[in-house]
Image (cartoon, rainbow, N blue to C red; front, side, top):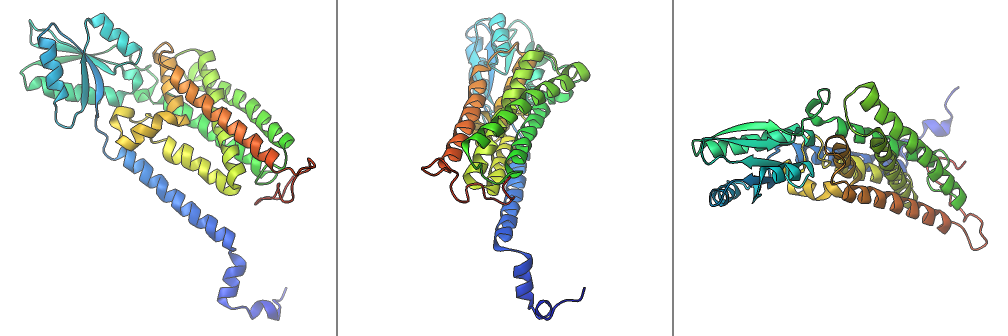
Length: 356
């Protein structure tokens, strides 16, 4: 087919405007900013991990215990947050309840002390604590023997399986929600459609939670712990992330999916305490990590797998809050798009994709 005179007579600027709309240009700029934020967040969180106020119990008779606590608390850079504990049994209990990350058992009659760590909470943290304590003890001509009282499973490399499992659930959550939303328009057209999407997301979450649990547990043997506990956690993580994505998409249309990725992937993943647990992250990521779904999910998965389900109430409430807030916002925005007569308002279902 030969080009028309009108087409061949266009200037470059006119061709550019025809090829790239203003909306597309804005979206491309948004993608660029999201990409740069991704690089900044991941490199910022991981480029220089170092222990920061790692909680450690110190078991030693007085006044030796007070002296050790004072010394460890004054190390350059404040890598440790020591506190005296009355007995080794209590220190072990605090580690298993995730109240402290490690414990130093001092032997005042000898020159070798014992350091108790929990590899199941992340091997990088256990190794960092061991290095700091070993250097501090060496300065006093003392030795340290490390014992991992909560070791990661043999097939759980560096204790990262919990993190990767939760990340997989998060990816499934926002992808499922994005497909449900975009396939029929960028914003829910009415309350019924929004409810159907949330119901579909709930069924998907149950299946995704079970599938992920079977893969890391019975299939690969990479993660111990309660199958039902991990299954329930998975369903909650997927639904929380998916509902959040639907809410963001309801607020900002197609741009909302980028907002969900910003929250979950750009900010949530590097601050989740996976590759480097919270005490090894910079202050900003330490602060936001526990409040975001990847961080709350990773903490809970590790607790279920290695700590008998201890210290999970707070993270589960955080995940539930994301799920409830996402659901409420999605439904509220859908109902808001109806006119007084109960019919969808004009353009309520409009978006990047055609309404369905």
